[in-house]
Length: 386
Image (cartoon, rainbow, N blue to C red; front, side):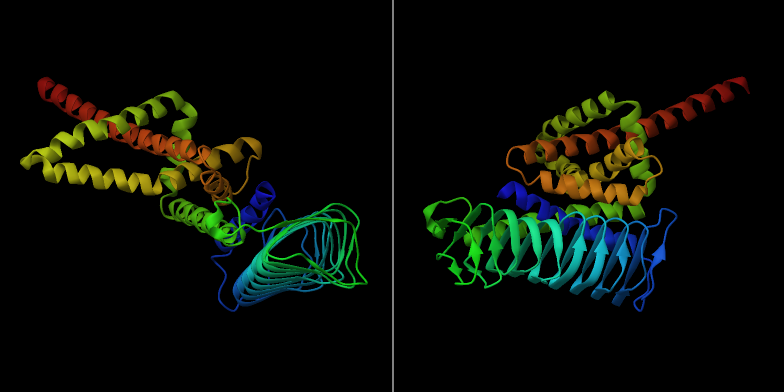
């Protein structure tokens, strides 16, 4: 269940890509802006997407509506109230908002998250994944994976249905032919007209039972992971916009001399402790020690985002040359932001990002020192010649 929820979590984080790509749109924007690759971007207060899109559609705003349009690839929509109505999507639908209403036919999947999520009877996709306070599923899908407080199934699931919730209800139009796994406070309520297979029901454990994924802690864990990863994405975006040259410089440096950068970062990490502790213990070195601590803390704060931004550019440059550098940085930040929340693995990833960032700044400082030293040497030689 947790592995499948990661897809939902990743979708929520990737919604920030929409914000990043649409920052130039004004508040009243209601028409799409299309790039050379056929991707359409639209943002504003009240957003309506009503034109067909050749590739991917990104829409974000307070109120977002995607009407009867054809989307050649994936559809991303995020906002307060999100409505996808009568849309044909050749890829996957990603939708996040406070209230989400989806009436779409997708060749791929539908991943959605919010407070209230509803999929209409006309919906169709290979799989649906939803995380919300309340979820209502209608339509037809091969599989469905849901975590919510209240869940209503009133559509068709032909293969696998997996639910973690407080309460679960199967409506009169519910048809589930495959396996059904339900973890809830009470047994699911099944309408007499519903045609469902045998339900593998597990009662939710109480908060003090030590069960690692009960109804309260499960939802809170998802939200904490989303918020943490979102923070990484936002910082990576800001770094890419306001310190893009530094991010690009780090990309070139790790590409040309990866061992030097990582070893420098590891040695610097050790040196911080070795140097700072004696300085702090001596009266005259307190200010210097505090300065080092503050600089080190700043690197720790931005380390994961900075590494994600530069490594994302490097990865997409090799996988997909010509891909938008800003978008590649944000996507990588979303992925690393999620991975760093995985126990044990997350610690290693965070540590590696810290070492990478430290190593870059050490090498950057070393390069500046070499330039200053060389200039002084040249100046001395000129003085001697004179």
